[in-house]
Image (cartoon, rainbow, N blue to C red; front, side, top):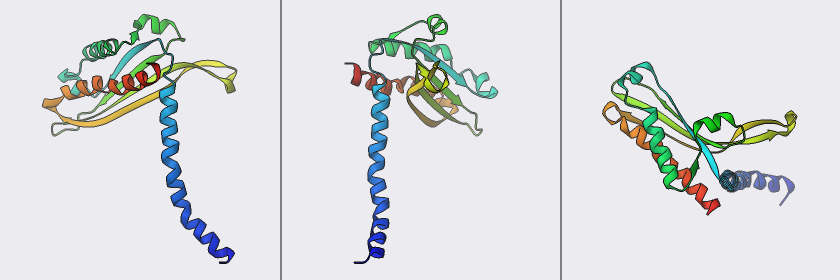
Length: 173
């Protein structure tokens, strides 16, 4: 076998080598995110809902109701949730941030997305140790519902907390 044939075989194997390594890299990132939850004793929780005027007028998504159900679920799981005023006054506390985005697509359909991020205080070493908050863990989902099933959005928002609780418990219990 000459050198050219060896290079051709190597090039033919290259996609396989890359595909084998990709899941390992993804798994490593998941473990890194999960490990960022280790040792967190308390956190804040906030919800933001973004929607267009026509859905807002329907009043189907109540931020206070979704937030209360979520906080209750987190507390039932044994997590300590600090009050909003404490989170606003301290840059040293981690907080869960839930963002719900909905849109009236017409014809009775409402696409939505929900993202959940844990933000923790961090120092930026390249920027004179500036302290800020960075997302160290995240998950999310997208879906679509009809007008008569808008409650599914709130249920999904509270349900997505299961991912966080599971990962938190894996590294803290």
